[in-house]
Length: 487
Ligand SMILES: Cc1cc2nc3c(=O)[nH]c(=O)nc-3n(C[C@H](O)[C@H](O)[C@H](O)COP(=O)(O)OP(=O)(O)OC[C@H]3O[C@@H](n4cnc5c(N)ncnc54)[C@H](O)[C@@H]3O)c2cc1C
Image 1 (cartoon, rainbow, N blue to C red):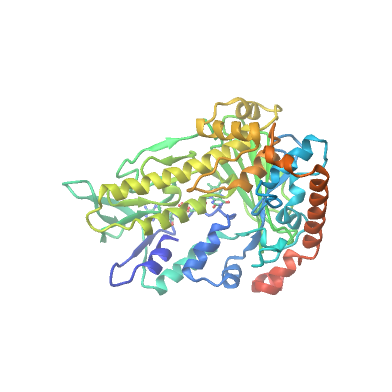
Image 2: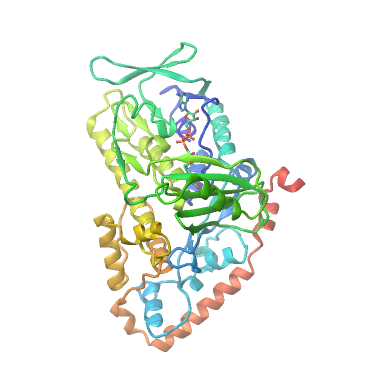
């Protein structure tokens, strides 16, 4: 991603880019679900969507279904889209809260087109008409990252990036200031550079092993520290969403691609053994396994400085927040975007570096708070893991946000970082945090008019969802891969 984006942004007159990677070391390769921002990354590169979908065996994604999170038996979808519409300048959810307190049984999720379409196995692209229900959502992809990497590599190579297969075995630093001046490959080659982008994964070859940038460990708030992953056959191509099912000591993902379904159990090794986690995963697959389950270890947190001297870390080298909301690839993308925005000259002004680090800190902390919410806002008391999550202390920034929502349904707004109001609404309400009060301006509208308006809206959303093409048919028509067509 970094090589492709920089090759696109910088001219070969300005910079030459070397991409060094080692097939022997390999990639993590399990990140398959994304958020809508990936579309803007692909668009910036000028990628054709149908071509990207064909080449990466992708499916469309309208959101994430959370099963058994607040209570066993619960299910809600965090959609990429809005709930209802503002009425007289007041957020829709306030009207829903009023009716809910008056005993109205409808769910907030009945007022979301992407939730309805996802449940019915439907998908189509959003339209541009501001009055249309088909304008009220966005979408992302689920794709095979082992194919996305090579796809972008070939894009980068076509734009002048020189790719070297080889293992880095040494790093040379300038004596006077510790800046990295070269990396040494296993074959003895010395590769010099002005700026190094550390994409070496969890090991943080330059940023940590060499520059000791430091790591902020968030395991006390997000106790999952392992995952076991396995692909199985895709049994249902109509699914345009990721599923995250809470389990005894973590949660299980299901990510349907065209040619297979990715599955994994993210868990805390303090509360469950590897064998038990593997057994739970395998017992809950929807199709035959296609490989042996693979274990991964991680420490949730972020690099204290992801830009240090002349090294900028992206991806897992910069930090990792477990994949509950599919945010890792987004964090990689935003690091690249911010790097382009703050691209240095050879002086590497410290103000520039500090600003980049401050921007990245905001990004990671926004995601962190949102993920903790899912674990903490639970009523589950059926295992020591859930007891811990329910009763643990949480960051002050999240405690403040939760209190404001609980008291009057207000979502704290921010300019930078991901997850806007509808996402917070989905997870608060989905996790059974219903505000005590609503915006008093709601009382300016006659309650019977509100009931009628909401009934009409529900019906319109249902009809719009029913009229949407099946996800599988849509893919086949728009961009089916040859392999999927054969199958
Ligand atoms: C359990 C789990 C589930 C995930 N699910 C999602 C998800 O659903 N959505 C999402 O957005 N993200 C997800 N992620 C994150 C996602 O996997 C990563 O963002 C993605 O794989 C990118 O990783 P990376 O390139 O930073 O590191 P890696 O994949 O580890 O790649 C590191 C690269 O560095 C090279 N390298 C390392 N050391 C050397 C060396 N000495 N010499 C030469 N080359 C070297 C390797 O060859 C490799 O190419 C998940 C991660 C985990 C652990």
